[in-house]
Length: 293
View 1: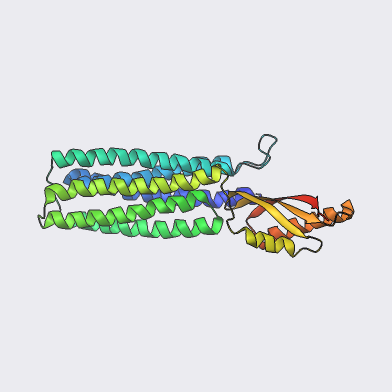
View 2: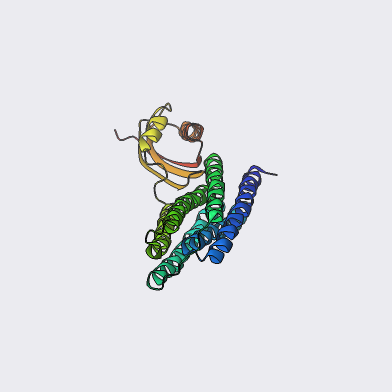
């Protein structure tokens, strides 16, 4: 198994594990939310269900991203992972709209939910599972430099906050503190949490797909290049790509009397220096220019 397939097989196993946990959590919340007529718990369950669905989208994206380079994709297929993360954002916006609509409907047509000890037990257990999933997925996402994992962990993080909101609502309902308003209000608040998560996912993914600068601190690159013997100046630095697949192109000026063989050696030295000092860089294009006399 080559490095790319091994890398994505690890991401795939993590997604499958989190998918199983997310859907276990979702089913528990939805079933008990429907039984107890608690709209906020049911809404939180559908939020968890969307977590699982985003895992499936991630698995599809990973399938395409791990394909080797070919004549039609000389830079590889890694951006498919980023592209499919936009599908996660679209799914989140859809869930947000439906929950917001249900919350508004419940405000004008209130339903008295049934809250008991089981309600609190289910929410606390599922929130603990979500917290573990969030930390596990985020740490693995950072380690493997995976958009799908890190963005999906953000989704799960929002799920933790919404679950906490549901617990607060359950307490208010149990104490009969404006329960006709609290439950739908929390449902609406959950929908806004989901909208925020969707916006963050879409913003991050679109920035990569639109070739926003991948390295903002270009001074680091300048310092590396100027450290190569024979380079006089460095300018016009551009970077793009995913966090684990950054492409750099730049212009350097050298002595105009330099032989092309030496210029080529300097170019190779620059590429090697950048890749060794910034491991996420996978491609460097150096434009050689004669220094103006």
